[in-house]
Length: 101
Image (cartoon, rainbow, N blue to C red; front, side, top):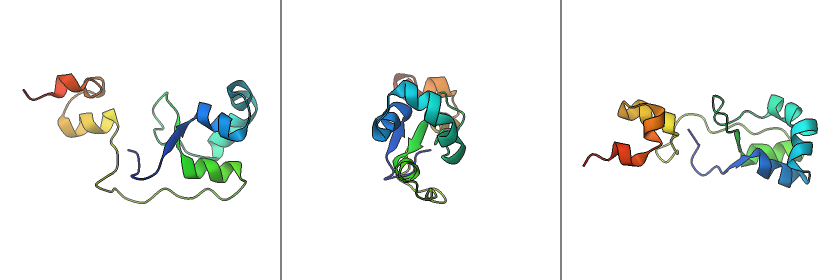
């Protein structure tokens, strides 16, 4: 789940914010970063991070906590949608398969 009002960034965008190439980011910076900043989708191969947490890390500041609990405007992942709808996550990624018509 993505907390409402909290933009997410991937590692390509983080490398740009850090002013280094993606290769340099992955080789020299990402391991330490990943130890301190949790991915929003820990079980996904697509690493997405909360922008406020990324900016704090890059500025050498304490990492702010994500909002506790759920909010009605949180964005759901395909896995969340599948759990609610009783479908597989890969089906939830294809909206035409969930169309009730």
